[in-house]
Image 1 (cartoon, protein in one colour):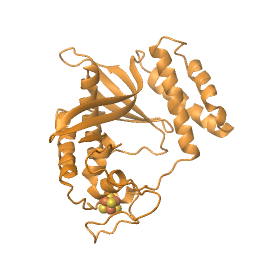
Image 2: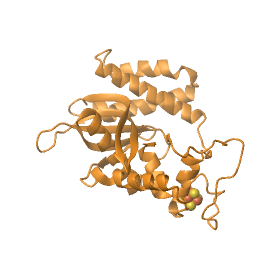
Image 3: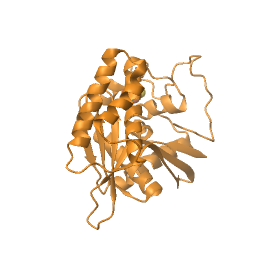
Length: 272
Ligand code: SF4
């Protein structure tokens, strides 16, 4: 049996097992958003990835003009207002994060996946996390190199992460980065491109084990096949299943619709 886990899966499980089961065991679709704003977000990520990759590969130059040229190529499908708003976001990012530093940032890698595997409760567990940018941070007290991880966000509002989300995200990244690159993680930052605001979370000693503890609980539950009872709380306000969830029924399954009929895999779970 093998299970693929990520920080967002662990956050969902730790917050509410029912919400986890409906989304990842039964694949019941959760109402989503997207549309034009999602398109803008994808193109902003693509432009930043090209800019940082060129920097890493010593192609082109590192000026704001280079970023503007890349954006001009990426944004051809957008209307004029979206092109302008995208460029304002990138320009602000460049001025704050690249030009304002006394020393230029030193990129380590741009856009990638961190994967690592281990055995928990005799189950192969594969952790997978994605990142937008890794840069070299200050060395630790012993002089060992450390990395800072940046995620670019395109939501309009800065959403402060709950402590649970921040802790699980940090611990998943710590586990993966060390396994993949042999370097320690120093911090994770969320940079909100449309507002220019940045949230930074520093790694604490407890993060090393945190994701493993939640993952162990989840794996035990998957193995035992026990109930996925709802865990109501303030997080229900953001839950896409809120209108369907009946708290008086502890073993409620998601509604049967043709859209999601996919049989459960009792032995081999491949979860994204
Ligand atoms: S509405 Fe609340 S209790 Fe119900 S599935 Fe969502 S998070 Fe869980």
